[in-house]
Amino acid sequence: MPKLREPEARLVALRIAALSPNGEVSTAEIKEKFPKYRSMSPEDLIPSTTRSNEHKWEQIVGNVISHKNSSTSIFKKGLAERTLDGIKITNLGLSVLKAKKLI
Image (cartoon, rainbow, N blue to C red):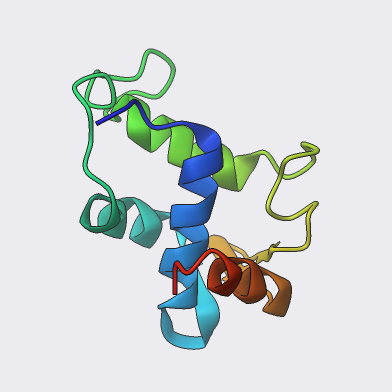
């Protein structure tokens, strides 16, 4: 299993949102459900050096949500909207997942 990278984490987070009620999910729920959608490599399970009590994979997932203004952001691309504590997938986000046969 290769190390988790942010592009893959973005798709998994969107998929989790798509399969959640009203397409909305909190960051905590994404992190809780994420391992059901993707196996972790040994590198992913290394403790984060910047976020205490988290693994590297959890840091990457957190970056997906917190990097709102990045050019690769799911928010900047219109794939999701930021909620108070997580994300809500948009119709465009659903279309992308369907095109990739992820939902």
